[in-house]
Image (tube, rainbow, N blue to C red; front, side, top):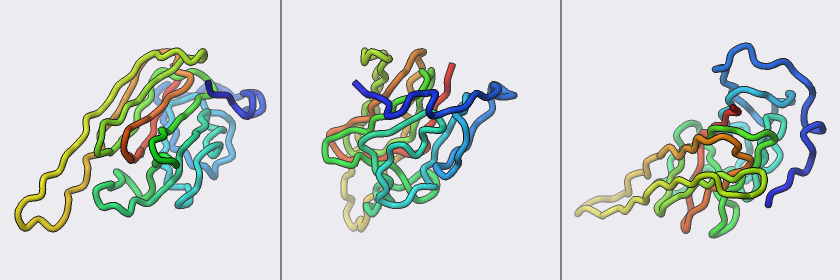
Length: 183
C-alpha cells in the first residue's frame, strides 16, 4: 500500500540503543541525525507555513503523505503548542505516515468538526486497529460574536507491529504533537 522512497539502510547508520527506555526525542526537521530508536514527538514548529510534509522526518523513522504545515486562519482550529499544525493537503484526503520500523504506540492531538479516525496497518496493509474521536457542533448563543476553539483531542493506538497509519475525516481537521514509540 505504502512504499518507502529509500530503504532503511539508506536512511540510517548503526547506532547504540538509547541509554534510557523512556528517553524522549524532541525532533526538528533541520536535524541531520541517524535514525533514533526511542520515543519521538514531533510538534512541526520547525516547518515553514504551507510546506508539504513528506521526507523531513525520515531520519527519525517516519515519512508523511498528504500533509501540509499550516498556521490555522480559522479561529476554531487553535494549535496546542506553537503556531503550526498539519492538515490534509487535499479535500477529503487523509494524512498518511509510514514508519521505517514497526512501532507500538502512535498518538496525536487532533481537532475537527467531524469525526477523525486513526487507522493502524501492518506491513501487509492489513488493518490492526482503528479508533475515532467524535465531532463537535457549535450553537450560536444570542449575542455571541465568535465561535469557541475546537478542543484538541488525543487520538491514540497502542498495538504492536504498526507499519503505517492513516488519519482521515469527512471534513478539514488539524493534527499536532505527533508521537510514536517503537516496542
